[in-house]
Length: 118
Image (cartoon, rainbow, N blue to C red; front, side, top):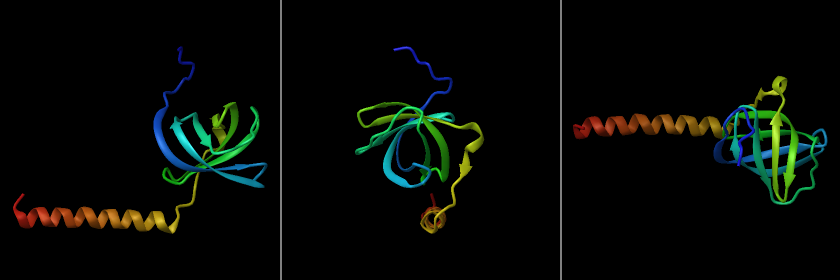
């Protein structure tokens, strides 16, 4: 199959939240692959059409993207991000606590290694 994308997409499995109809409807989704210019997302059930606009929030990346639907097949949707609309999503309290916890874990692991002489 010929690759038509300008930017390679990374295969990922991230939870996402799609906001449709100017924010009137939100749907959980799974981001299956992601690049700087677009993504493939999967919905449990959705009725979408090419050209429809949406906002996609990917909490794990801490980002929100405004996008348009390029293609739709079964539960999979291909979207292209709008250049001027890529924005930083506000970090949740949970994300901040997770970062702090991971930092403390690394510090404790270094201290354990020091005590063990590693």
